[in-house]
Length: 122
Image (tube, rainbow, N blue to C red; front, side):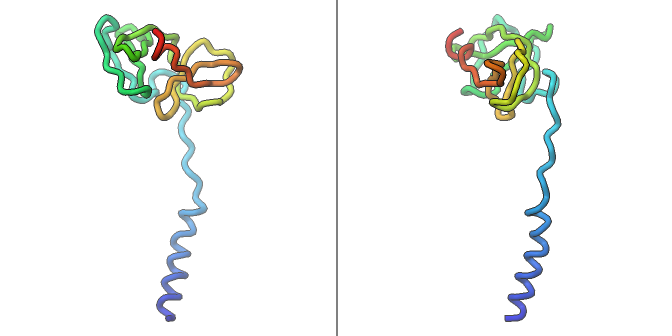
């Protein structure tokens, strides 16, 4: 019985730092260079293969931003400004952003909002 008590206390002591440790802060991403899974050097005249509604951005050789839409075509987009979280405040940016999990965001009514208009309707 003493062994069980010792093991329980030891387990609690070892687990305590794991419970109280805070997660590492993610580095801010405020440019296209740090946005994950952006296709580079695309040819906008060629077809693309959308992989669902996530990670749809592509850049041509000149750095112009495009989105692979539901029809498998590259459509021009405003500048990709980085990674943002849904509903985070924005300052009227005319660019677009990507959520950490790959969704398209646009600045609307003072906040970053998911926007599938270009994906479905362009």
